[in-house]
Amino acid sequence: MDGKLAEKWVRRWDAQQERYIADREERFHVLIDVVEHVTRDVAEPVVLDLGCGPGSLATRLAGRLPHARVVGIDNDPFLLALARASVPADAKIEYLHVGLGDDGWLLEGAVDAAVSTTALHWLRPERLAGVYRDLAGVLRPGGALVNGDHLYDDQPGVRDLAEAIKDRRATRVGVEANEDWKSWWAAAADDPDLRAVFTGDELGGTSTGYGNRLSPQAHGTLLREAGFAEVGTVWQYGDDYVLAALR
Image (cartoon, rainbow, N blue to C red; front, side):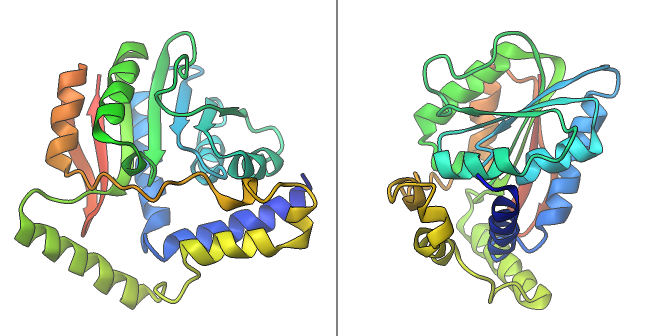
């Protein structure tokens, strides 16, 4: 795939995602801050990006931590093609076409950190629990899973308040008029340059539209049951969280 075409669509993806996450760049910074801290004594850390999409987080990780090996995992062929075609020069990033939780989905060997951003909510709770168990088995002691996502408090009043705060923030920042998810995919499917490279199915996306809407409390329970020693929120704005689980 042409690199310039890929970069154009990744930029458009980033703007589309900001419609839903007004402080997306700050969330990226926090995620990488955690990874940098927990791998500070590792010469060449291995970092997994779960549900990496077109590589927005992986690219930023490699830029901040050029000594790290970043491995992005996703099952969407089009988004992975965008990621592979837009890898910065000299960045140590590789991408694997694998579904989270599929048989043999994990790398062999120890992993120093795993990250995810706005992806794990697509997994049904039983599959997510399996992913957490698998990760707990490969993360080194002191390693971390860092998840940035919309999480929904178990308390209905707090949940509604958090969503309202998120929406007010989006209005103040001016991102609520950004292109939405469905429009982005529809535009990709209509782009003749992309249609020359990808099938209609590939440009249709692999999302089922399912969202588990789990709370931070529910994630904490699943993570502790999987074998993580500590779980906590390290950043939050409304219902937008960064949750860290330490091995």
